Amino acid sequence: MRLTILQGLLCLALLASFANAQQENAVAAHVQNTSASQSKDSQAIVYVYRYKQFVGSALAPSVYCDETELARMENGRFFVAKLSPGNHVFRSNDKQAGIEVDLKGAQDYYIRVELATGFMKGHGRLVSVAPEQGSYEIKKLKPLEADRVKDTQRVVAATTEGQ
Image (cartoon, rainbow, N blue to C red; front, top):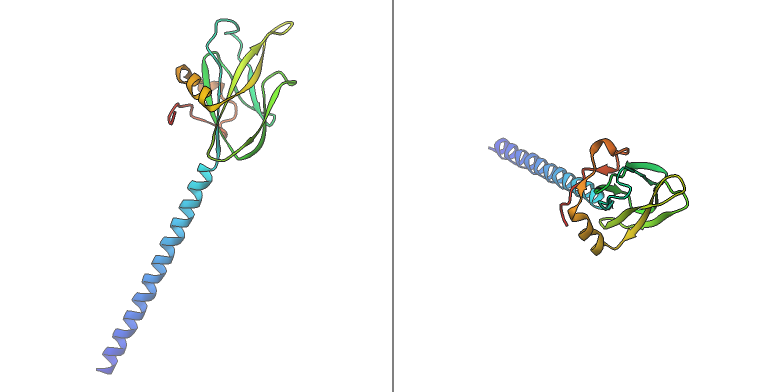
């Protein structure tokens, strides 16, 4: 009888130990999933767009972030870039004009590409736009064609969800 009671107590101790380990694993998995989703959510979202205009419609100026080409901007299109928080410099093919932005995680930013006339040809110039204005202006534009995207790591599928 003592042996049966002892075996029963041993089984209960093993079960309690196993249940505790399972709970610890579940908590660790939850923490890992939460931190992974927070790191994705902590990225800044930058919408880059260009009005649909007749003048300069054949031009497709490049858009750069930190000297890496993101995309070639077509007339009447937009794209979305997910970037890490911190200081970033945006420019187009006009190296004299650019925008330096201190991006905050989980915030939206809007940059409009405008065409500036040049001696031989036009070139792109970037303008920082308030979110209220940018979210309104981008609604009538189409997503940029995939073949115009140069940095597929930072440029994500162009959609207007969440606006």
